[in-house]
Length: 196
Image 1: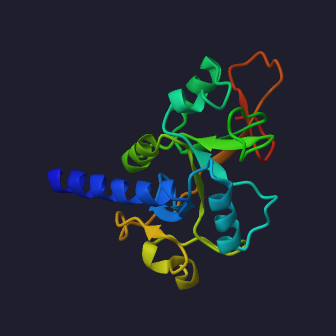
Image 2: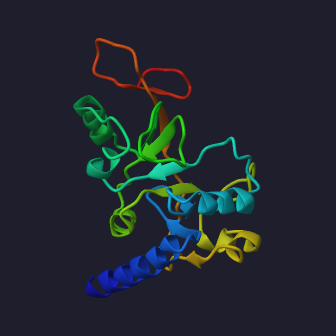
Image 3: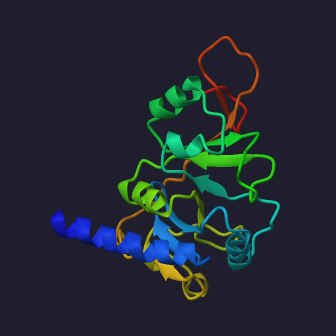
């Protein structure tokens, strides 16, 4: 356990150096292998769009370390906190407004990861990071690090050396914040349109 903590700290240190300099990293998140950058750096975000060959109109998920960080950018009510805390599966919430984050103009999809490495990485950077699958747009995402396309792997600035032999295969559930004055305690709607 002690050696794992040393390795994790070392990987966080390296990844943060690249993130602070505008780099793009590959990292294991709480769902699948992800491609990320400093979510406040538009040039870095543009690099991800170019790497993935993704249309810039398709937004990237933003990971935040905790509710304290999320409150810098979002209006988080106790109802929303309780909903997020009650989820058994990683859940990304789409908010219809965002503050103090110029790279996300109108709406933003946010997840607070339930993963020690991700949370510590974000806390050390002290900024949100983007999270998108490590694949070309429209293609399937890799479940193992070894399955990442060489054309992507060779163009990122750093690939975190953790969980490389672990199968990461479950994307997050994505929900839209329910903004009406509904009487029940469920503040979100899944993208399929059913209340959850």
